[in-house]
Length: 603
Picture 1 (tube, rainbow, N blue to C red):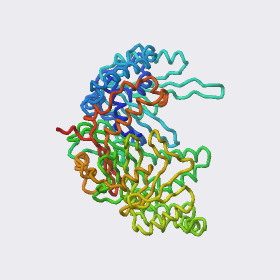
Picture 2 (cartoon, rainbow, N blue to C red):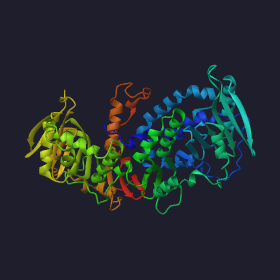
Picture 3 (cartoon, one colour):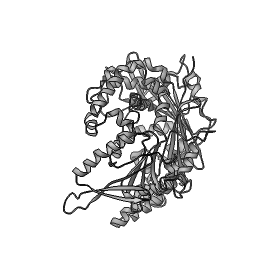
Picture 4 (cartoon, helix red, strand yellow):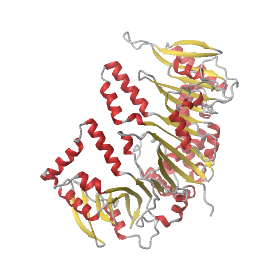
């Protein structure tokens, strides 16, 4: 079953369209906002300052919805938002809302609020962030603009005050300027335990700030006017990533932004182990050898209704390209990428990537030399080739050196003569057909799996059968895979019938590269790319709907209460599901991946 990003968007959209649009983030904030006390106030006093100018510079994880109300409005105008509001989904939508409301009944009764009242609290920016302290401790902080919902916030505060009193939490208040930072400590679990931080918060203007401890929320308060030094907005990696992801010709901030610094997290955790157990030095040295510090961060943006795009997301991986290090595995070649002629328009999705195989192998070899010893990888490969059982197979000369680095991948979800056909096929470009035929023969002789050579449409190929494999005559699915050499490529198919499909040829079928849907998407690709992708979201959605409607009860944990039989035939929603595209470019600073869907095309 192929379930793409559109399926996830539909699930989120069902919540959004039902008036639960803040639910994805607010489910977490329900607990956070409940730390308000009775005396909280929320007068509008501060000009809007973005969260990244109030957070400290050492943030390692960050997610921000710039304005919840604007996000809801923009979402409702996307094709996915309009699809969720379509009358065809009304029966399922009503049942979905009913089930969610019933599931939240106990929580709403405890809070004395309806679900819609609770979810209406986020009004402006909602931000989540995490920092890793020098000792390796992970702290978190959240900022929530509740707008004119001060009364609701006070009600939540009263409920939490009762909870604190009931559970013997210790409450402290520290005044910083004109703002009180309130913090809590949970009582010791036993005589050998000690009080633990149970959160801290303050309210300033229409903003609630909640964090794991007083120091973390205090860091935000000291930067409140956004004019201080040492903020996340000054973090070079964060700023560089957002600059790369920014829409051309637009200075407006994206509705959703995110950032993650995996390098700093790993370094701090390793340092914590070294300081606490005295065992961290090897871990720190290994991280340095692997070149983890060359990963400067990853982040991106999500936008809606921007120009000709219905939705678009951009993700940038910031790298420092120096030898040696793992980052050198991420070396790609830019070229004008086009689907091969054998890819017909009825395949569900198509992807292609140009990986620099030589540099990738060199990076692996360099790391092996540093970690194991000089020449270690080459020695192991030669030792394997000299073993009579290997049939003389030299993994570097016979396999790695044969790869050009260009790989095509296609996926199919469909039917043929009433039988289901689904699976994937890889086409790997090679240097020399004759030498690769010899290599495949050596691999077949290893006996790792059952290789059966047979002919189809005048072409010889291997049918591969794993232990205990059999065909399912009912569903038409096959456990036999296939491998062949065709037009300078090694083709590997998860289902041998997909390989037969390619060997049979496109014939009268339309080639993907010539189809209107692909041309419309590909016209937005840059001339030179390292990766391209194309997906037929209508087919993927149909597979998702069919799977949900036929799945036995309880198959998907947590979704037992929803009646998926009320979902309509996915074909009635096809008008909302155009093909989507993606592409990747690279430069000296890293990799930029863009994924998009276009606005509805007029007939």
